[in-house]
Length: 265
Image 1 (spheres, rainbow, N blue to C red):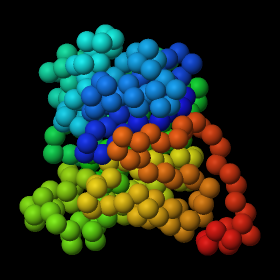
Image 2 (image 1 turned 135 degrees about the horizontal axis):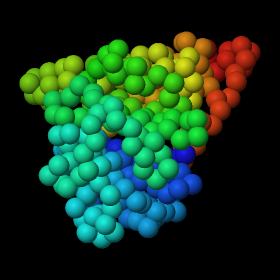
Image 3 (image 1 turned 30 degrees about the horizontal axis):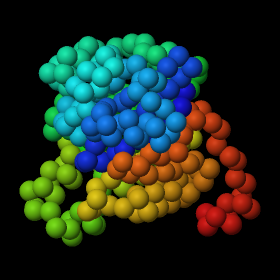
């Protein structure tokens, strides 16, 4: 199993996941034309997509669904409260289902609208895509334990948010337990998961005003380095710019104490 985050942020979200049996999208929050271009940039096309899994009902996760279905009659799957208006097959959170050779299940995350992460497993490896939520409580952390690859929200830097241009009510909404994750929260989650096999972290849904890729990646890498997990790969996903391929389950390089010192640990 491997994946590419095609685009992430308030302007549109989509992640492509493939196995030997076929490919699927996690969310389709961009136009069909844009998704085609992004797929082409990684050597794929709509012919490689058999299904769309929806994690969140807002347009930055769903706006391309209807045009994709018209063009290639994709299977659309969602948890309750997310995709019924788009004709999705509704699967209850926690129930496992098979799609393109991948065993998947939705799990609820705290947000101000029905929102879910999705965990996918195949051949002994696992990946999770989870964005648009405000805190990583014990229930969410349990869903993430043992994952090999994680696409996780790092929406804002707390200092930038509170000193930034947004009105006070919006700042409070973003920082609330049912709002959006900060760099600090993403770093804490990654560090908690690091001893349990985590190899790849992709930070998503970065705010264009209250964060930067360097800021988010730096915060998470620093936390992992401080815990002795220098080898875990950390990347940021950006709007309309695909990440490199993430080979789910690819081993983390071992860094001995001498090498760690060279990297500033």
